[in-house]
Image 1 (spheres, rainbow, N blue to C red):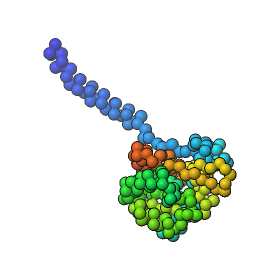
Image 2: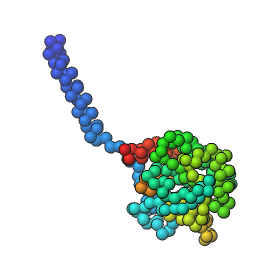
Image 3: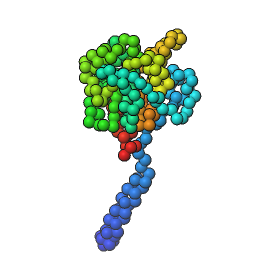
Image 4: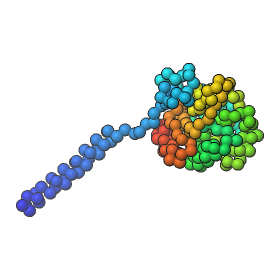
Length: 223
């Protein structure tokens, strides 16, 4: 019996090594890196989408914009060209979810500080209140780093249309008021093709961790 095992010892070792190699090869062939979905208006809660887009199922991208940041500088889509970015909607006088959202954006800012591929963009939903001076004061209080994070104000109609027709991110009051908006806790992850790749609860710490992981996943698409 011992002689039998001795005779087949090397065969067994070779078979084991071969098995490991075969398993490894199959693992690498079958392994598919996780890819983030591309969100279309038809895939999103209809309450967040302009009625003209609720049935759109492909080719949705963020529209061009022309807004002004906390330093009085014009910010356009060109400033985000070939960038991944996180967008949200807020207002400086909000005392409920906005402080939590802003704190979480600050945390994200600190995580991406040395990453030239990723930026942040926060739009006020009350541009009539949130002037450049107000945004500048707010930015300083909240630790905003200008090169990473723009807080923008501008024409309310444009912001409304960005929120409802591009980012698919806010609700309306439903009373027919001109460009009425109820901002939500949504953070949106936007890719280099201006496509929405993720929605996250900006008040939820676990969702912020998921967002940071999804940024890493998205970055792999460009490697």
